[in-house]
Length: 250
Image (cartoon, rainbow, N blue to C red; front, side, top):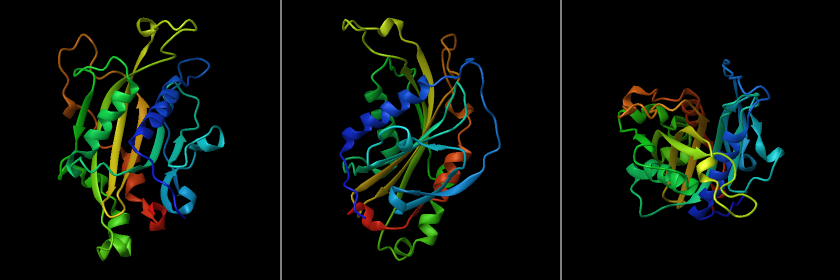
């Protein structure tokens, strides 16, 4: 199976998915779910990749068009804070160091969202070598014979952060800006980049969820270290991630 990779401009399409995520609300506008999470192995990109995903999450390709280079899933609960998972195959960004890849893609998401982003409301924590052990793709590194033999290699960059995303349309029917009327939502984005240098590919995996702003206006500073760093769901997804067919990347 050969999947044609796309350039980084495709991130704009992923940002659209995040906007759809935050605009999905329940009928009463109040319900927030808290449930125990069960997982099952799911085929991705026609079975060329597999990973354990939450059993109750829906494949968005069944309800709307999703580009061939993406897999998009969303929780199936009626809630004001739906979570979304996006797995995306992109052309490798050669100019970006491996250690900085997660920061690079996080900032590109903020730029493509094109809202009132400032240094105070774009906040990101990049995991260092000690912290990112929780996000290591152990299945890839220990179970894939081609990786063990070093025929293929994987570099990992991960972290998490917060962005503000504008709700609704940017302009009215007359073309006038609606910036002053748009509601801003705070989104937590957990991100993991699996870099495949030999395949000239960056696998970008993001888990997004609207949250209470951890840095409200009345606060003058924000300590990222006070946030919960490890996202158990993304940890599980990455730790069970396996590439079954490397021909996916050409």
